[in-house]
Length: 233
Image 1: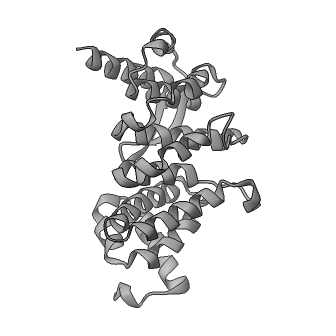
Image 2 (image 1 turned 45 degrees about the vertical axis):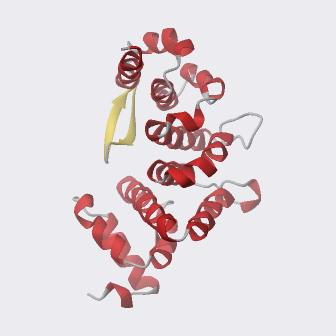
Image 3 (image 1 turned 90 degrees about the vertical axis):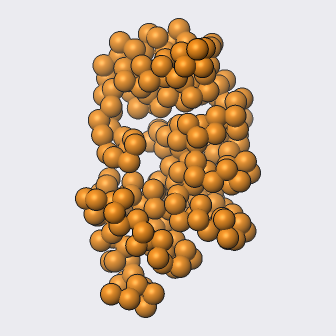
């Protein structure tokens, strides 16, 4: 099939077929064979998909494609990030499902964009910023921040005061993501609280290391403590 000739619904069906692949890394080169501006619109629609695998694969693909685009045309990449930001704006009239995760994935993959937009991503969890009130959107923001700080912790070294409270959240996913962020940031002040979470067996589902998986808060806390120990060593 000549992918360059695909358009409209045919293009969207083809993109979905790729996103449904059980061997997603193998089909990523096919995404990169599309002109970036052509494939981005279908990917935006799949950020809202009810199929978790499709949604997370769309987030991953968007990160790769926008990072590739930024290497050639930085302004076009910024336009895509501004679309994600609009989705997270109250004035958009909707809930920006998948948008903070997509932002985190893009910024994790491109240092130049990360330098420009890291603090905007953080603002969605700051009470003095563009705080997302929706509980599930907060999960998405924390996931996006966790993804970014694993790659570029220095860009959000001032994030600790805005994240640390989530270590006490009633939501295990938020506790887990907050612990992971604290570990990447080597937060000494959060050490005791993370240590307490290392016995927290509560589980949640997430996308980690390229796969959907069930994690426990304990696993995230242990990962964070290991990262903090590596820093001390």
